[in-house]
Image 1 (tube, one colour):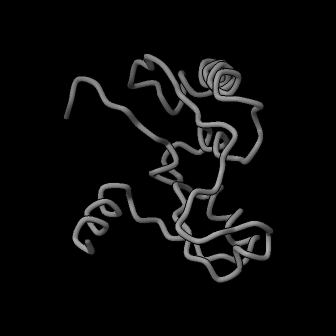
Image 2: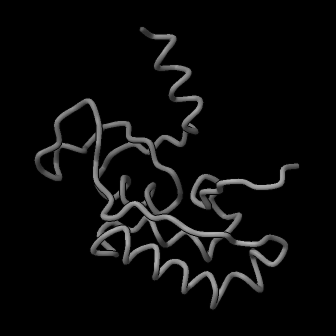
Length: 118
C-alpha cells in the first residue's frame, strides 16, 4: 500500500465506472473547466460510493482529447486499421467507431518497449 497515489480511473476500466466519462472527446472546452466539472461530479456522485475509502486531494483532466501518433491522420478514414492506445473503455469505443484497433498497454509497458526498440 501507499500513503498517496495518482490514479487514472480509465487505466482500470470498470473499477470506477462513474469516473470514466472524462475521456469523451471535446466534452470540455479546456482542461481548467474539465477539472472543475470533474471535481464537482466526483463530490456529488463518487465520494460517498466508489471513492468512500479514500480522500480525493485533487483532479486533473486533459481536454480536449487529441490524437498524437507516429502516423499522420488528417481525416477520419485515416484511423482505419491503425493500432491506437486506449486508456479506457470510452476511448476504445471511439477507436472502434473509427475502425481502428484499440490496444490497452499501460504507459510503463509502452515506454519499456519503446526504449528496447532503439
